[in-house]
Image (cartoon, rainbow, N blue to C red; front, side, top):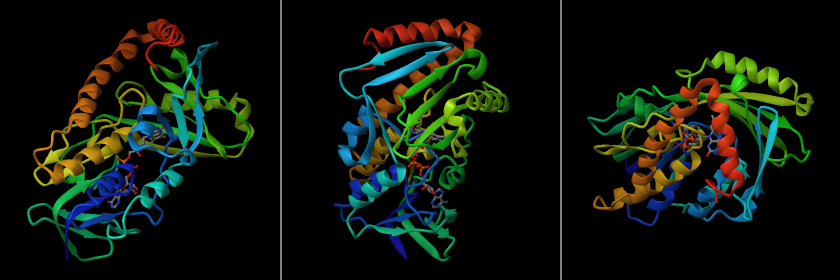
Length: 334
Ligand SMILES: Cc1cc2nc3c(=O)[nH]c(=O)nc-3n(C[C@H](O)[C@H](O)[C@H](O)COP(=O)(O)OP(=O)(O)OC[C@H]3O[C@@H](n4cnc5c(N)ncnc54)[C@H](O)[C@@H]3O)c2cc1C
């Protein structure tokens, strides 16, 4: 059995890549290890650039926000804009919408895990058995990517992110909590959804004691009014260790490529852009992936920027206050 393009993983990156390839003559197979496409440990926060990039219809968006409450220690800064700048989505609905964009001729194998890759003979083996040959193999399989491991690329820079999904329909504002003593150089987010709120944080274990952050987060969480509701705890890594995306006839996209933001852990936009650009490169090897190149350049800049609050230690609070001041003046976010 042979397909021109085999995409491992039906997350935002893999589905966007397939969408871009679907009007070509290439045969495309998506292999997804889970039975359900969509559910993923994620806070489901998007920014305007995601919405503009995909032209996401309003029914996919759960909430859109023109304001953000930024808590720095005990003081709250209200950030307001004329137009929405942060949105929340449900990952299952988002994937359903992405799937609806796909034509029937794109083959999708669910409940099927890629277990073996032979890049010398260009085939993979799955949990369902049998070899499937490819011309191009795409690693769109997230932070614990088998395709990336096969290429021998370690993920040394992964954020360990964790969150509570708190079951509540109470209305909540969009909130970020910065507290140098409790959360070091990282922050806690509160993203409201229709049926629940996502409250979480994360850090690079290299720069902050992950267990200590977890302990401080639990203690802080227990003091919040919403802690009394039914909740589910989730933890998952976010791979931020970008080391390239093109390896002969193998490409890595999204979290498998380590494209998520080192500062915010945001990775949906990066997954969509890389999926889209790699598809265009497969269709036309002379294509110049300007958006992807820009994203990589910006990622390197933000990685350096991340060091600032880390190096500042307890003085980072001054930096937070200065940033809040700029945000209130209408800077940094349009
Ligand atoms: C706690 C947390 C909160 C987050 N919040 C946000 C947020 O608010 N906004 C944001 O932009 N990003 C957020 N992210 C990051 C975001 O979830 C990822 O960057 C994004 O999902 C990456 O998309 P992807 O398509 O590259 O990979 P994924 O969404 O991880 O998809 C990979 C797919 O591959 C499948 N797969 C894996 N291995 C195999 C295999 N061997 N065979 C077959 N299939 C396989 C998986 O089942 C999965 O469906 C968060 C992450 C975490 C952990």
